[in-house]
Length: 77
Image 1: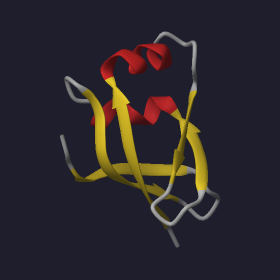
Image 2 (image 1 turned 45 degrees about the vertical axis):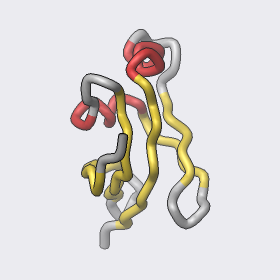
Image 3 (image 1 turned 60 degrees about the vertical axis):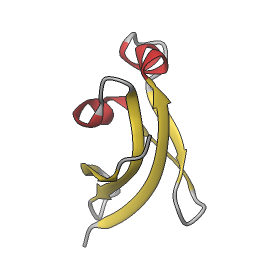
């Protein structure tokens, strides 16, 4: 059974350069139910927009807590 976590991300484009430059390799975020999670920054590549990564996202993990997918639930400015 897959686990689904919802996170609100507010990462401006200039901060993403630290992830892609290799200076930072993980993102720490708070789920909408209050848990703190950490995940590899490279999974954000599919959701990056010109201004960065903003919105609410659903991270799907398998039964071994391995990343399966990330989906944008909604955008906001």
